[in-house]
Image (cartoon, rainbow, N blue to C red; front, side, top):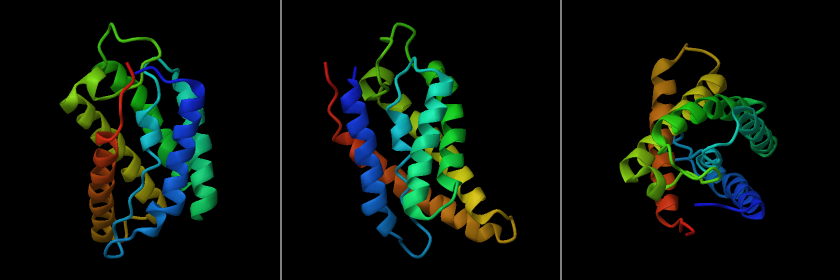
Length: 168
């Protein structure tokens, strides 16, 4: 799927808006909070440069941090996830994929795309909760927060991706 710049900017703003005003309000059992900002990384073109992807991730992370009262945590997690995203995507995308194509189920295949989402989400959430706790003093709580938030975020990401319509 090839997206235009206004479409990408609109998608980024929509995801940021949803994270700030919808997903930040959800907290199940005091542990599970969906962190959907990482979905922006799912929509970075296949052949985007690593530096530009990391800069975009940093800027989006800072915006999320500013409105979520998490100083630097989202930015750090987004940058690390974007660092992993490019090599992961280059290993999974077909060699003949379009230069400006965005990863989706049709480009990568259903299972590869789900695996791609799962790895990026796991890296993001792992770094996010390690930075948030900044200690291994209570590993059970850290693991419970990671697993529950990861599961909830994957559920929402999968549901949102089901409604995404690829452009021809």
